[in-house]
Image (cartoon, rainbow, N blue to C red; front, side, top):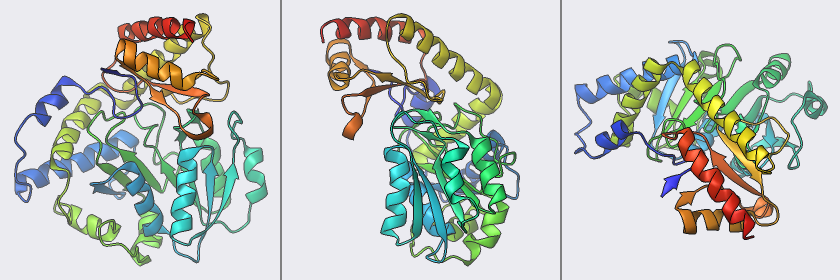
Length: 354
């Protein structure tokens, strides 16, 4: 089965080799050294400073999203959530469950996020903006510069879920004044699911994290940050994933993040050009380099099932109201152009029969 999914993605041979090894005991100086190196390399990959904190969580990306909200905000704060799909909606669910005040900027499918969408919320006393840098359910990439400017003008903290965008789209922690950045293991890092990295700005750590009671033992940032002083986590970590992370971060360091993003972008753009030449429709809103949404209404699910059953090619289906509208093609991980040529040919064959 060849994966063109958004996560997990096709893994690299070096990662698979590490995964085949016996896991070591982790409460050792050797493992601490690896984790401290992960901290330095990850900061470097997003242009964060040494004063910004890094937390390594053994959880999915959703767990890291929840951790960011409960460690940084209280019931006294009012939050603004960008809801352009199921992942933006998830930030709203987290706020609702934890009884935090929030409003949503709701974007119907196909609508581009603009400054005009934000104007009704200008200077209304919001403390934080919660956004998925690209809404993975639709592939729309939001303008991080515009969002950062809005937060600066409104004295808001900027909380960015970059789970899908990391390694595919430009992310500069310092340049855009990001306060919390969330990444998980199974997308551009091309690792197994089950781990997440959260980077916390010096500002929000000082002003909010140190004085906020998270109400949670396992996801409490203060405990994680204290333990990272010695290169450890407070509870048993996903040892194998963090060992693989070290290898991948070194790989990214050697390639260079800008070069990595350039290669993903070139692959995505070439795929979209070739797809459109074959009559495949792609949405017109701004797209992340991480994936290409294909409009296949009203047979999207049948296209996904046909590719899987007949060709062993796994693309990402959608759920809910987009179930029969979109399938999503990922561009992350160990994939080459020859793989996409095979996929395009198979898509055309399946489409003929639908």
